[in-house]
Image (cartoon, rainbow, N blue to C red; front, side, top):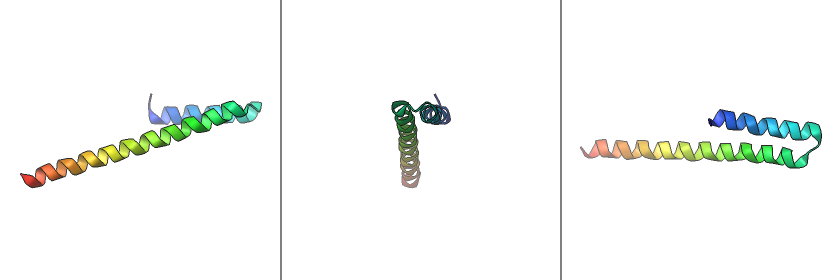
Length: 61
């Protein structure tokens, strides 16, 4: 599933929890959104590291 879809799913859970007064569902939605942010940040760092590695390889050649 894409990050945007996961984020939307988390937001939907959070809103549904607020509307129904279900604190657990609301918290689960916030947690899903936080997981997505962390996943995106890790992906970004990984991509930057790959870019640095590739540029270092080109510099050595």
